[in-house]
Length: 259
Image (tube, rainbow, N blue to C red; front, side, top):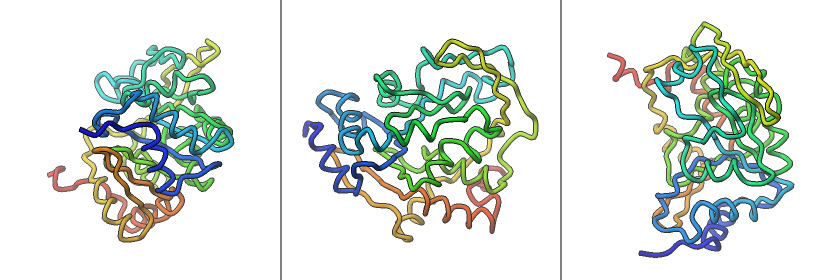
């Protein structure tokens, strides 16, 4: 079995087109590589070296949803603590948010961890977004500022920006009710964050976007170890997905599984 080293990851990221000053939203699976020398730290260090502190890295750092997303928001007394609550989105994300210089956005269900000047700007004001992934969220802003989306060993089923495309363009995927869960921010203050959670039980067919992105020329791929890395241009991805949702609001819902 090939041992993946940090330099292998750096070479692959550059080969995909990532460069100094870029901002990239990363969804990842550490185990997809096989064996990585240095583990999650090597992946994170490689990303930081490639984009630099003037660029930015974003990663989901969502908490475990006991009873689903509604289990976190229905009880308004539940408190999520940005300082200590682990990320349930994989080893790389859980190591990332704990790194020096990394901050998490203030949101009970979809907090985003950020490092680098551009990324830290993007997570500001997340607590003011009624839809966690909607207009003004870090996922939306990443599309507006010319960011990129990197899938490391995962498919578009993990691509949270597809929630953004649904939310911004009026897909029927959110509760009409507003909930008021609480968060402890990184200064220890309790913050109430009004939110409209995703409707439970809606099966998605997000993986359909893989072939669409490749056919439109907005997705580049390469291998590192056993992991398939996919880099997508976020602005073009958002525009493409928005056009599909405007034509068919339930385009990304798997209607066959709804029957």
